[in-house]
Length: 217
Length: 320
Image (cartoon, rainbow over all chains, first blue to last red; front, side, top):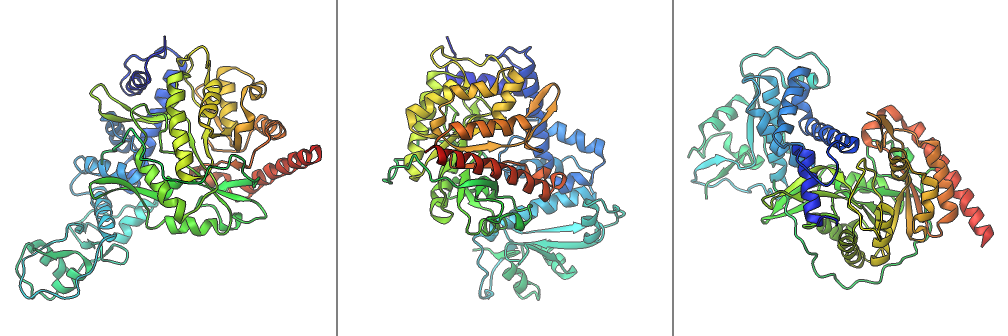
């Protein structure tokens, strides 16, 4: 008598994840090997989903965080952006603050959010006379603690620049050609002041056009 | 983001009856952007096999999970195919999941049918999602084989038939490589080959015969792949995959990570001489292994596949 298909699939999926019983002999080398392959795939997907962030971590710490994530049930999403949506917040809670890895973690999340907003983004044609300005729902400002170019080069095996105080703000927004650009100190200060009613700020017009800020309806 | 799966297909639109016999194309290769464009020439390949999920991402649109084109890869993928014929080879449908398939794939294929026309559509005979004890869907993390039961055969055959009608082109199912012995089986179906035969007979769909998967299972479970070909409904085989693999912990893995082993080339020659309706042979290589493998070696594998294809086709034509 064969088990119903639903039961067979539930039992096998849980056996591979949790080591519980299923229709396959738990001592069989095939089940053990499949469990190992599954683990390897989950870890591989996780590494791929946060490649830049993990590249800046020492190997032992990288393996520890990935293993912890997979232990918590991560690494199974079919699409990498979907995996990143879960993994990056997981890493953000566990990375040293400040660190270049945390900066890249924030950057990857900001890029994903800006990309989500880019499909439907329409730049406003005129600046309103009166309004409350707020941060755009698909925008973020990330501070780098070294020259951003040097931090990016470190992902590709370049030397890791020393960690200093917040040095360069980078803006991520759906209306930007590459979804990001360096921000000025004035823009960063304005960003920090939001929500604000200062519609006459000299930086407000450009930030509105970039999709970095929006008007409260 | 939560995957939402529905158990039933939408009513199939009225489409022409699928053509069971596809005109022979020749040898194909995957649509891989990391491979030099120069490889995508009719000097080397006759068609391109596109894995559509590579060029899409999940997005919640109006509260509904959909697969939307990736802004950066989608157009590049279409350009890469140029004027070469295209076939689609999906990887995420999970056609064997008892509780339901991954519906966004079907929506994606609905759109691709018009935007990126294809000659046939193939998927894997396996499941990638299941329900946990609370009835919540979980991803298995790795594709898993189906039991050789009448219930599994009927479930997949019904879905395959509807998909074939939905897109109006042949739908093919690929035999999987796996490492699990002792899968449940009904006596009248027997094993994975009996299961595939039952599904293709019930549904009218075709088979994508992955010869490297067959070889892997033969090596790991200790049966003769060449003799097993006699048990496969070869008149249903429309496409063939060849690939390379590697050993790990005592198992031969379907890694798509290297050259095609000699026994698989032998199986290709044997299959092409026996299967009357094969329309294409694809050499598979995972993108992550491209730097190690290199374009010259890809070209050599494709040339060898083409040589076998031409030799077998000449022989078939002479026999006819």
